[in-house]
Length: 257
Image (tube, rainbow, N blue to C red; front, side, top):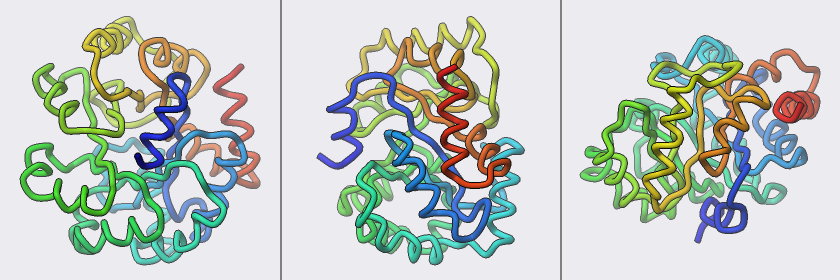
């Protein structure tokens, strides 16, 4: 049981996972951001690997990725930064990135480095499930990593159940088929989608991402799932705040008031 599985074993609801882009707002922000999130009581962290063509990301995260690349962030630099992270950080850590830079690094080398620095899981939005099963599943498992798959309102039930049958971490329920970005509320249709997922009684817990930015969106998602993932809202707060600790304080306030 790795740290992701342990989290969901110990906590069944209101889980809060937070995303930020490595190398943003400064090149050396990675470890301070992680420590601030842990100190703020966040349950899990997704560290974004910046990429020049992030198709699933909205303007906020695209902007952060662009700045991170200009700052000099790379996969090699990120792994160097994470080398000793487990000396002070105990919560689950996930790397989220697109397939191109991972393949350029070398998929098995990438997974090996993830294991060495203490990464627990991967989210690769543009890696098709079928291709993962054929080419990458064995390698990923060999290094003790969970590959987290995304489902959307358009994902057929048969595919959701297939993903569920071959997962052991959690399932990332994208709130809509559009790109990332903060929202003020969720429509009845989106809440019906969350309810449909809940009614499927999947083996794996569900976390909702894309659009979580305040108490209303968090509560709407948590009513049907194990928790939420916040991305764009925190990335914005990092840009606006004098320190990651202040950004975390503002995020928690936004999600609770």
